[in-house]
Image 1 (spheres, rainbow, N blue to C red):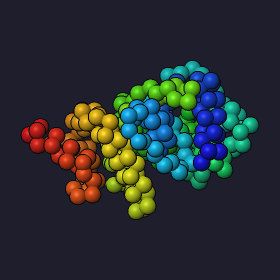
Image 2: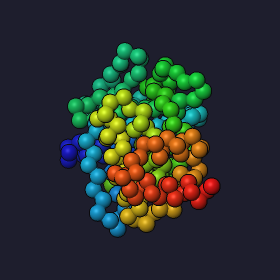
Image 3: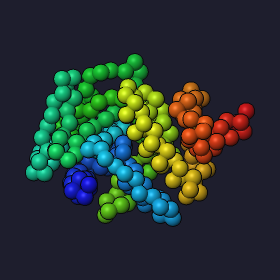
Length: 231
């Protein structure tokens, strides 16, 4: 774990110096590491096992930069991997760097070109929500943009129900509850309710449908109380 963590900081440090982090948002499981800066009053030590560093690129990308990300990370042992659908990722035995963009309209299974980074990105649903609800965090000497923790947790609940395997469903839900319960313990219930109430009603239903009334209290009770008050 320590080796992976040190490589993460090395990668993010290089991306920050090159200006890539200014144009991207770190999403996915590694956000939980940076949330430690927000949960200083409680015992918050998330377990992160994933190799993936997911970088969300808000659209439209207006930057004029030209950064060869693959060349930037080559000295650290990252190589470019092409999958059969044409998506590119940078792979190391300990970490994988991938770019993502919000999927819009009817959607597409085609890679979205990112010439500014010499890469392409995978379009995925619901990512616009994260792009519109993000914060800056300073951690480990780095300034990074991550989704606001409430947005992270609620988005993870929606995504958990869409996973095709039980293992991935459990993982996504566990990560969502780790952050949302930490927020409750830290006294941030209001931020959760604000994020939830700002969601489309159809999205709210997806969130609550992912929760179990018995197993997922207190977050289930909190969100249900918001539903009753809004009627």
